[in-house]
Amino acid sequence: MSNVHITGRLENDEASAVVALAEAAAEHDGVAPLSEQTLLRVRHGAEDGTARFHLIFEETGSRPATLTGFAFAESSPGEPDSGELVVAPAHRRRGHGRALLDSLTAQAPAAGLRVWAHGRLEGAVALARSAGWRQVRGLLKMRMRLRGDGSADLPEPTLPEAGRSRLAIRPFAVGADEEAWLRVNAAAFADHPEQGGITLRDLRQRETEAWFDPDGFFVAEEAGTGALAGFHWTKVHADGAGLTSGEPVGEVYVVGVAPAWQGTGLGKALTVIGLRYLRDRGLPWVLLYVDEENSPAVRLYESLGFTVWDADVMYASL
Image (cartoon, rainbow, N blue to C red; front, side):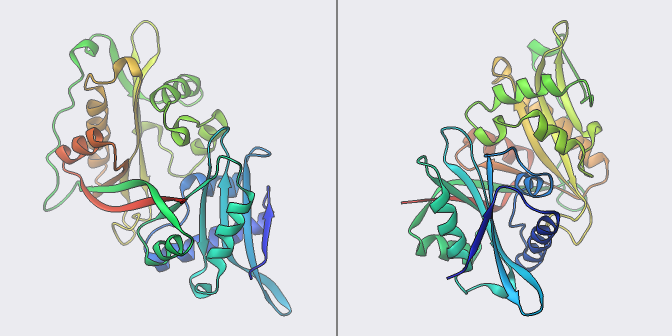
């Protein structure tokens, strides 16, 4: 039985070991095992009582112990914990994955636990099956070629008629737009606790990331009120995100529309504006994630030229 160490705060050397473990697993599996949110918590920490880090170390005699497994769980009031786990490629099939899953389960609140598996990897599917877990959510990973043979022919962005005289599309202003963006994001994703629950601290952390580009973060501002009607936040993956061998690719990071503007076509217009920005940077590919049950969004992305590439799966106990 693996001995799992549980803590609410990582030391610097532990955080570095987790990042190195995640990078090794990503290189081996072809898919990153930990989400951006989890890696931010690893590097920057989390508010007290909101997160737990589970670690498995292997003793190596006189040498420092080696981190061979890691899991993370984050809590939201009234919601099941959201977790992820990864085992070092050279230390798999030794029970570490099950030990981490059992540890996450034992520490979960009454609302329960849900665990993300990135990509439909054989080991993750086998672990879920052996533990008696089932899929409760799927997140499609879609891609579209922006350059070269088979690249998409992007339309001109068209604002909804009601917004042509009322909306201005501009880049996000760091230091000025944070509170307005948090309000529209929370409203747009009121039924999506992971995205809708982003805090000012979370946003500030992302603003310090090397990939953050305010010029690729488009907001639709209402004339007169200054309120934000929607936004399209793009991202560039310098490592190719599994689509290229190191050549940067783009991502439709998140598109959100205020409830009053939903169904007007603003979301599509913002999506196209961001896609054209990424294309004009010379990027060869763009990717995105979308809930597989969100049929309207899937149809929109397919109409623009996206196709399904892979999927992330959320599991919960039966």
